[in-house]
Length: 118
Image (cartoon, rainbow, N blue to C red; front, side, top):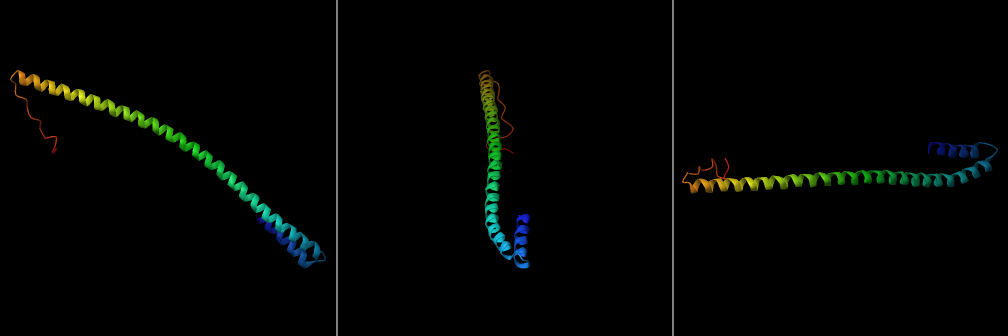
């Protein structure tokens, strides 16, 4: 953009300061249209680079979401396994309590109430 501005000013100075007034003014006039075309080309190029960058970021985000989905599925599986283990252990505890009661052995109370932990 600075090079474009310098050539713009060169045409202006040539047009005002020398024997090539008409040549300088015509050059200035034609260069002015090229500056706008160059600006549009720069904007289009920048938009294209932005799209490329956005596409790369989008691909990265899609990959990360897929990895997170796998991790969540694994953690949900572990949570289900823990719940199954807890249910199994609870049933064994109830079975033990029933066995103790049948044999006339007192079942000790838990150290705290499940509804009101201390």
